[in-house]
Length: 101
Ligand code: HEC
Image (tube, rainbow, N blue to C red; front, side, top):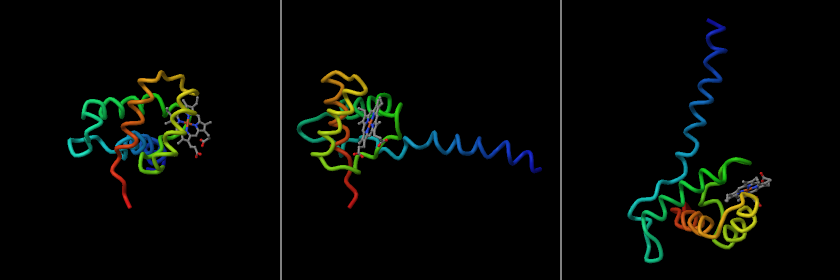
């Protein structure tokens, strides 16, 4: 019995962690404002997950205010070697996060 638990614990950790990205809100029509479309937000989320999780855990969009994200996306965009379009889409996604008080 004991050896079974040793086997399953890492498995459980793995399963729980693959759910991490789920905490990042998924854009819906209610997040869309005049300066963006749903497609852009969906693409921004995809780019954020694929470009920004290789060196550290993804930060939740609501963690920083707009000014901080603008600064971070410039610094981190350099590290991740992103072009302007990719940075702009990621920034759109980050700034349209539902803000939890
Ligand atoms: C090449 C590695 C690398 C990539 C790719 C990368 N980062 Fe970072 N990032 C770092 C390092 C190193 C730090 C500082 C150490 C830490 O906080 O983990 C950091 C810190 C941060 C912080 C916290 C800054 C603070 O003051 O607390 C944010 C926010 C951030 N990154 C966002 C991003 C975003 C958005 C992307 C995608 C565009 C990204 N990172 C991609 C290496 C990277």
